[in-house]
Length: 95
Image (cartoon, rainbow, N blue to C red; front, side, top):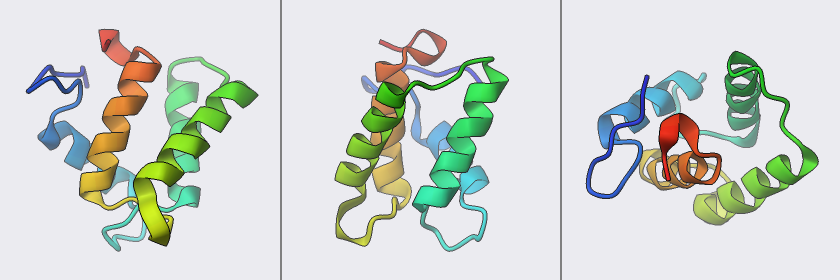
């Protein structure tokens, strides 16, 4: 799906929630490290991209910062993070 510009965001809430629900493989309304890494590897493969160590370091730093003390991302935290991700990696023209 293409990123949609809404309120200065690259990924709107509807798209973010759809991605979140697809990543949340155990349906506990949280995305943990294993789920996020698995999803990012699949996404990178779909784009024929091999993430560098720097890419993974950025993901770790930002995802942990947004996840907070429980080290998981809820839907609201994920929405914030996925927009940072789309902007950082310029996904679908996001800036």
